[in-house]
Image 1: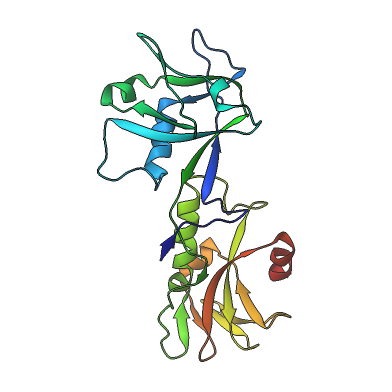
Image 2: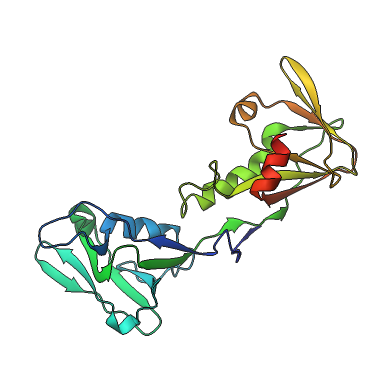
Length: 241
């Protein structure tokens, strides 16, 4: 099931900081700005955009990371024919026009605030963390790819708002195998290896691209349950041992 998650690290209302792009005539690199293409890309990832609504406008929610009052923030779309003001309401909502012509022009949206001080808030649908759809068990074995499908779907969804999600040093995910304290065995081409349960009685599996391509069988104890869980840096270090 796909859900909107509110956690301190997954950000159901995920913030996308205004990126600094190449300056253009009449603009200053000191101010927060975002190319039109990036605005459209964000809107396409936003699950809160109204379905069947006005296709000629895109709606956004602006937030100040420095607690600057919204009525002091000015937004303009720098069109070739001149700057167009983008009004912001009391809740931070504003809209931009959408058209093929604007996609071709790709104007900058410029603010009167320093770069790195403003965020756009938007909602992203991601697969729910927790118990995943059970992979098919055949004669006590599951396929590696079937086991990690949920993890890959989650990472794909999160990368829409955090391109570094899942990379070393960032937020990590793992498959938690509830085995009653027993180990699981991965049967690869050149041999099998058993992964023992940790001190918590669980077997934790991290995603490996090469193993995913090989797609080996994994022997699991009867009644094993599988969960998709975030792991702390300390837990990650323990799993890698």
